[in-house]
Length: 190
Image 1 (tube, helix red, strand yellow):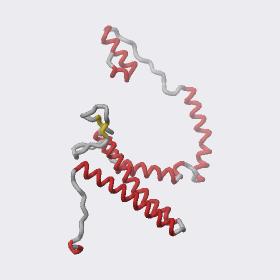
Image 2 (cartoon, rainbow, N blue to C red):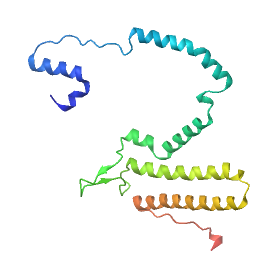
Image 3 (tube, helix red, strand yellow):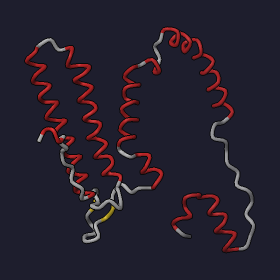
Image 4 (tube, rainbow, N blue to C red):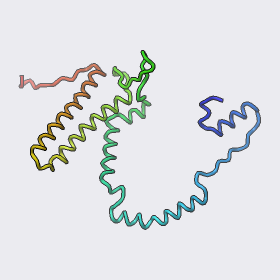
């Protein structure tokens, strides 16, 4: 039997036996996922939990009311968007490939604009998310700090981190595409 046929175990076994012997195998009887007693228990537990659920909804104490959950969800959506996650799913982009020169090595960054690997997108998405988080720290947390010296030190650290992240994105883009990014100065500044 082929290794690929093991994914559907019972069905592939029936096909294999029928193909080899010519005999007809009876129908495959599969038990239900949840038995009758388990279903009754689940319904009873659901009915018992209804008043507790209503109480939590009225108090505003559910997972849907938790701002940390919404923040984590927003960060995930942002990271998924800027990292090209949907592009990778639609195009079946591999996360990495094996090196042609040495099959024991893995390539996570492919030079050239003809192909993109999932690791490249996740790396750039991480850097974009890092910049976004640093801006959020400055605009939401740093303004609440009373010490002016602490604010200045934190702002300097944030600027260094953001400069590093943007520089890495620019260097990776230049390495991948061959196009260099240069500054534009208005003609009146020359």
